[in-house]
Length: 108
Image (cartoon, rainbow, N blue to C red):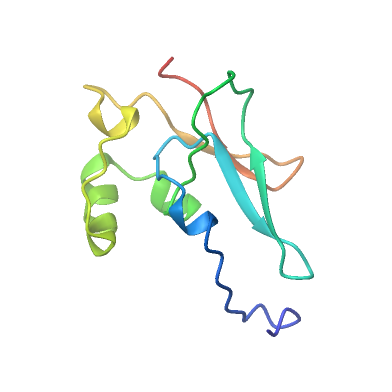
């Protein structure tokens, strides 16, 4: 691992099974020691699935067709509530206070 240069490789077995959403409920960071840190992006209801995005923040701000094209290499077609909505009401924004990318909970 080369955390000082930003180059690292990690294998996170349980995290690799997390579901994708284009309007995720959770975000992932890697700690300085290589620990994977999962945090909620909004308040969650008991039993609600924690999802993450397989896409970068700039990719999440694209239209559904562009996001689905990028996700082709993951070998699935995204069918999250944002991709299935008749109008994409979610738009990404960068939170200037924390530097964390987040999404408005605009679909429900």
